[in-house]
Length: 230
Image (cartoon, rainbow, N blue to C red):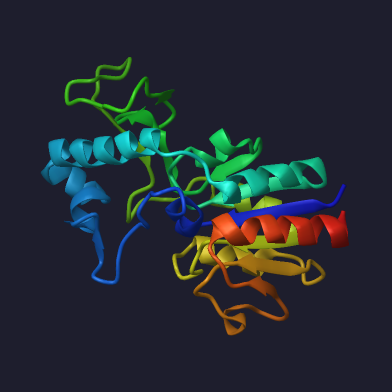
C-alpha cells in the first residue's frame, strides 16, 4: 500500500460550520488572538480563555463531519493514510480516520498547568475555573498557543519524509511551522490539493489542484487518487 499523507486546515472544518481560525482583521470569533490563544492571555484572564474554548467546544459538539472528512477516511481502504491536521476539532476522528496527528492540540482534551504530560479527555464541553489536575493545579485547554512549542511537529516531519503521495486540503499554507511540512516531502511524491482559494504558484513544482471546498472537492479527489494510484 502506498503511503498518503494528508495535510488539512481550517477549510475542511469550515464546511461543517466551524468558523475558520481568524479573519483578515486578525480576530478570532471577535477576540484578539493574543487574548485567547497565548500564554500571556491565559495569565491575564484565564476565565476569559476558558469561556472562549468552552464556546468553541460546544460548537464542535453541535456540528457533524462533512463529505470531505468522510472522503479522507475512505482513502484508508486503498492507502496507508496519515492525517496531519492544523485543526483542533475532532471531526476527522468522527469522520472515521484512524491515524491523526494534531499539530495545534485538541479541543476535546485538557491538560495540567504544571505538568504537560498530564492530558485528559474532557467529559462534555465545559472546562471550569477550579477544575484541577491530580497534582492540584488548574486544568487548561490542550491547545498549542502562540509562542509555545509545537510538540507534534517532529512526528509530522517523520511521517512526511517517506510519503508516496501528499494531499493538501483546506489550508492556505501560510501558518508556520505547519506550512513548512511540504518541504520535507520527497520530490518523487506527487502533490495534490483541494482548496478554492489556492493557486499552483504556492507549491514547489507540479500540483494537481481541485479549486473547490472540501465537502464537494474531496470526494472527487478521493476518486481520482483511487483510480490513478491505488
